[in-house]
Length: 287
Image 1 (cartoon, rainbow, N blue to C red):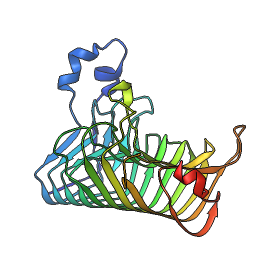
Image 2 (cartoon, rainbow, N blue to C red):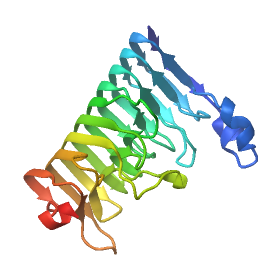
Image 3 (cartoon, rainbow, N blue to C red):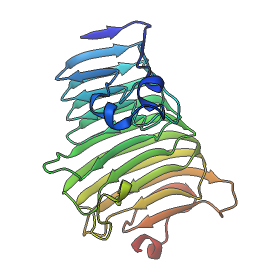
């Protein structure tokens, strides 16, 4: 299947779903995606713009060999739950040469995904590119092989993030490759968060059971809005966050909260090449 052209899909989310006078409980079960692809394979989506979706702009489930090229997402920073492209249970998905401006994750990656390639994407506003959240539901499948390369993040909440729930279900994230990324005034340029617990829906005292390993972060440059430019907040469970490689980092922070640092908890990264700021000390890495 090929979906192409220069058209715009307008979900009129501001008037129909986000406004304060819209009863949220009444509309939530029926909030539509602008685009939904299920069990699609060998397909190309190109030249299309999606604007102000009520829910996710694109929901991609159980798909194989699908490419988004020259794809544009438009929504304001305050638009809720408007992920640009959400991917689940899918394999060999490519997103390239695209601009994603939205109020939630630019690209969100759920469980059961394998071999995803994201290249030449400009993200912002939004929450960045997120793997997860994972570990909340029974029977989740691993996420294997995510490649994010040559992407730019402008004014986003996060750059690239891996997030897992504490206290709940086991899972696995492996072969994550984040390379040649540019950050412009990003709150959290690089973050692994294994205590993701919005709205108090879990017990943080119990560690995440999702194993995060074989993560490669290379050539990430730019500016951050917080001094902790790299945050590795890993689970206290044994061997749940290991083989994290970091090289070629040049991230700066100019603000009143101190100098730029890398923050490591329950993780001992493997460092290579030039590092600005320096890597975590062994004591800090083990904290």
